[in-house]
Image 1: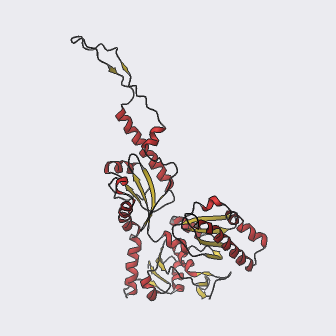
Image 2 (image 1 turned 30 degrees about the vertical axis):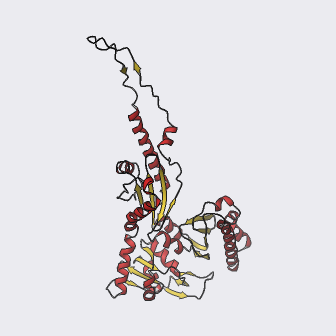
Length: 385
């Protein structure tokens, strides 16, 4: 999910916005638990909506699409490690999550996006395209994981290209040229039309590269993660020319990906991707540590001060504790934060509010390092000015 997608969800406000998070699974028998989890979460959302005063027809209208997915067995076969279901009047958003999440149901005036933000903005995801002439595979990767993914329309190798084209082996030989009169020998003559088998193989390889590039561009249209290419040097160079995706890593794994194996591929791809995906976060962490050590860097730790600054567009980046919720209500007119002991229909998680306000105004949001939690509290931010 791109930053722009998160911002679009953050801008959708008005009660009710229903946010449901459940862990999901990739294989049997574990996936049989997932529809039960969604059903339980929808019952909790129903209770919260009823407690807020919504009428029964309105509640049923909001939750109808999600309830329909509970018995849909094919839907549950193609999940990832977590699922977010975001519901408002007239729209239900389904987002597969790359990491497991605790079960959570929040009904408030805005979507609860912090669980998604910390997954998609914290730098451990990349893509890998591993290619030889005979084998083309695509992977979603993380620091310790590499998972092969089917890409619609991407050929599996040159054999697939050859199977859908035809080549006439007849090269146009004829014997009308009687040869050299001095020698008296006849010589065959080839037409200039057509291509030789060697030329045809080059054309087939070009078609393979073109089709792979188009399929990858379509598949990654919604991504901002780096794409690492694994291919022998000459093939990798040609492949890059056919991919328009803007986030192709500059370094190529110049090995035969079939020969080296997936374990080596994962390690090499992460070596290339890590400094790219974590660059912004690591720079921000260094600045935050310096701030907490007493350096003269503009920022704050108090949630009320951070909210005021975020809404004014002054927050460059904010760090939030991964496992924390701070329930309350921020009075925009008086710029005052009220903290509540638990969630309810008239409040929200103000850490989530801080995250979305920062994102909407061009800042970034990261998970607070555990070793800084005692010094920073649930939140800490750095200002632009």
